[in-house]
Length: 193
Image (cartoon, rainbow, N blue to C red):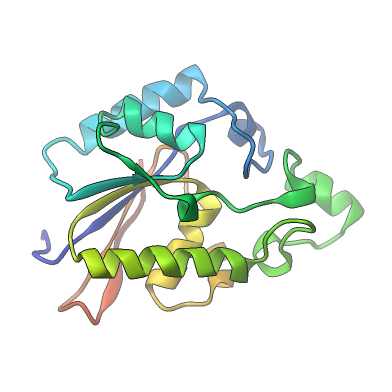
């Protein structure tokens, strides 16, 4: 059943060469693959007929291109707080490679040297949530996996580290909303492909 309360649609960007290979892609601007471009176009058809008061995008090329290819680029507002996790020294390398020199490392628990910790990302997510609650309207957001996972956790009032409990595939759509009223935030749908 559709809610009469505002829903926030979250779109993870389409596939890139680095997302395909598992390389941490924070601030590097990696373009979408051909498959990622096709999936971005498909996002548009999956969201057809839905109205949004605003469209927000991460500053990354992959998020902005996903937004554009899905048909929502006109009037999209780029928000720096929607940027992916800053992986610092771990930018461009895989978890397996990191764990070879730092056994047991986990992003959400341990953060990244010269980059962000979960609390830093949570602070950015909290600012976005404050804007969403103030807008009190349906908004469409394009960003990246780890940031959106933290956003989902913070939406529910969970610590940023609990973003580790959520997974997002490329070009997936998730929906944040409310149950009975604006004091009861919920995840209405997650990681739909």
